[in-house]
Image: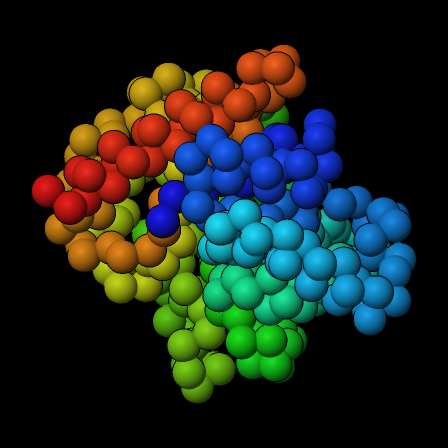
Length: 294
């Protein structure tokens, strides 16, 4: 299944019109962009029952168009230093995202790890692990209640204009987080979400990361860049070696959906050309699917 982040179209047309445009231009799945709602948005201010009605209506609209929710992005950042009250509101927004994923029928919610805006020293790595262990552990009851698994995504830091590794950047980092959190949960509630653009920005080999993650890898965020900034552009418009990555996916037996996070690409076009941009991404997705079947 090929899916696309709803954000770049929904920001212009709204959720329902965005679903229609995606369905009419080649996509069968969506990555719902709940992360784009600020903490003070009207959506988070709604009582829980009204939020549920909103997402139930959206699910009915989505299914009527032949679309499935493949994943959902919850609110981020998940943590900012010296903001304890806002961080608790961020946690509540993440919980709301997991509930929304369950209502939409999405099996996965992507929840970014907490990070500190500091160079990655052994001390920062350990401190961040303890923060994330507590953070992710608090979400385990909600994941069970909603029947949703949590995707841990590889991230990066930009300090002083220089891109640097975060505590969860490499395949080894991701595998460690997923395995340790599943041990705490006592079941598989945590999976790996490989963001190709984030990895490429740091000079990491996405094919090697795919092989290292193995069956932990259930989610993809597909986009490209020139290793100069986090462009979120379409595949083949950057310098990521897509052929090797696709071969690694095929060899790994990957059976998840192919989700594009190329909002930088779509946003570069005026609204009247967005359908064509979406169609090109869908065609790219079908080519990727054919490569995986070869």
